[in-house]
Image (cartoon, rainbow, N blue to C red; front, side, top):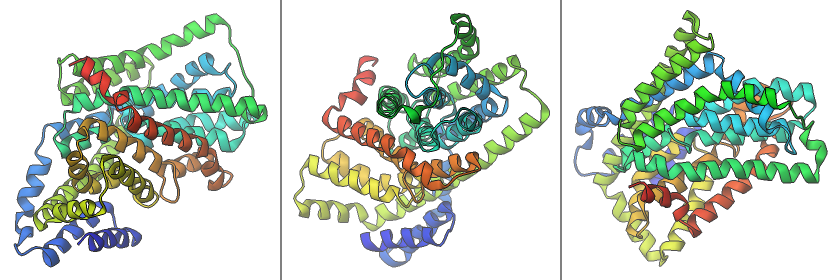
Length: 427
């Protein structure tokens, strides 16, 4: 059954069938060929139970929050403000790309939305100031991946929902690795540009008065992040309630900067409906597939297979890491997560690993999938914003950042407290 399910998944995706539909088709296939019970008769109940969750209401709220900030022009102001604070470093404006992606990751919850936002604002600057197109665009693609790590993260919400893990603790666990990755991206950029100064463009400094004035544009975003995440951590609000408050805050920020109009509101709502519908179709399809796989005994098959290999806990987790890296080449990130969770997570927990820690490790591996060809979504988002040059340039530019992600994977395996100490400290 393992080979049949894997082959069916890759084959259906190769036919360009939407991922949500693929999950339903696989569920029906497992029911037809591997189950002695008519599992499909439980489809209605599965659709209802998997979508009737207060936790999932946070998803459209966080999507709408990001849409409002992106479409109201707040991104442009944030980018300009961070340019004044970080462009003195070797690499110049590249650091503004990473810093802006980090800040928007802390509000949008979506990597693709973050990459699209920063790319749209930054690419004209790269052409005007003569930056190396590979490193500049690679930094945007890599920085955008932080959207699914730094809270609030839609992917962490989905992981918590599917594994029945505390979402506030997942948010806490993702904060330190997410910020560490952002600093690692900036560090590797500095190193590259010290060795090859021509790649980094012009280093610029600004009068202290301009830098202080720029804080007026950064302040509302920082306050919004503090409002959302702080209310969750302090126990004042659930993630869903905090997301609703965040939408109100984003609307006030957009109004403060004069970005509210009918067209912006219409586009924000339409974008939210489209993205949320896609996510929910995948979540519901994954829930049905998970139900059929569990009922057909796939978990027992995998456990017996891994036991037969004689791997210990470390060996098992290394096999899982390699599996996610390989699958990340071919499967879109949210789909990769929801398809593998029912198979991999029980196996990992059986080896004694913490579900919070593994959720963060999985997110780093999924981040890597966003910038590795041929299916890395952020590569295509950034290339679309460039409107010139080849996709190969973006791919080459992401290589240093992929290396830093691998370093983070190794660090999380060697030192699990990187993810676990903050949730433990604030319990």
